[in-house]
Amino acid sequence: MRPFAKDQSKNPPAKNWLDSLLRRFSRIAYGLAVLLMYTLASTALGLALAPSLWIWSLLRAWSVALPGPLPWIFAGFALALCFFIFGLTLLVVVPVYNWVLPTRVKPFKGGYYTLHALPWFLHNGLFYLVRFTFLPFVTLTPFGVWFLKAMGMKIGRHAFINTEYISDPQLITVGDDAALGGSVRIFAHYGGGGNLVIAPVIVGHRATLGLACCVMGDVIIGDDATILPESVLLPGSRVGAGETWGGVPARRIEREEMDRIKAEIRGMAETLG
Image 1 (cartoon, rainbow, N blue to C red):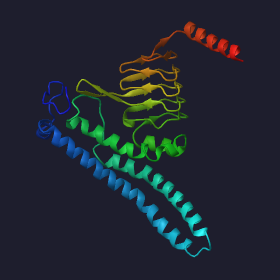
Image 2 (tube, rainbow, N blue to C red):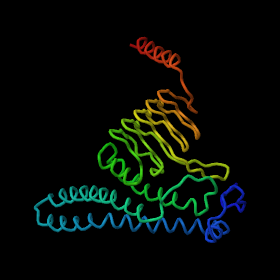
Image 3 (cartoon, helix red, strand yellow):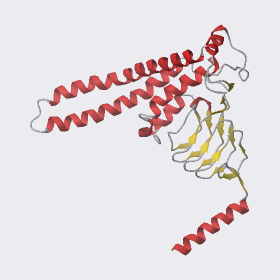
């Protein structure tokens, strides 16, 4: 199905008259949704900027009386400080918006341009305000974990999350002592053929996701499982407890094969050494 196509055969029944209207005028509805998101983003960013602007005006006025180059040095420090105040404030403002607005994402399969998809659109739009601005500065800190939880992500005790490449946090569960390596991409949706599919992702207790692996929607990773670096878990993957998966697309790697791979790596290292 092409974007904005009129064929609704892959969609669930319309929720109400408004849903029917949105499907009929999908181009207009999509444009209005984007404008709404821009408006909400502007107000959220504006609220987060307000304390920084106030503190900047106070610090700037105080620095004018300093001698020589000190006003410029102090102004640079003040700007940097205000950036972090803005970011930390944004970590609070966005979850409040997410709580107040209709962003309760539920599993769904159907067209992009329906009321069913609107909560998903708003939820991710708000989340990306932080992901693409300040989240990299607080990844691996209590502030980052708090923000992810405030956005609805279920995170177990002592979980290690070393990535900001996350979407759909509301539908992601990470178990106790699980480890998400650097640049891991994890999202609870996928699309194709005119369909949007929103489906939860579950990472079990003590599971390990290697550097830059990709976990798509509708994936369950069992306790103590390992996903090798750069691997891609396609939708519908079910990784059993204690299993090791790797490759593109990822598949189960038996212990004997894994031992052979490790032996080859050690042999190469010894040769090069």
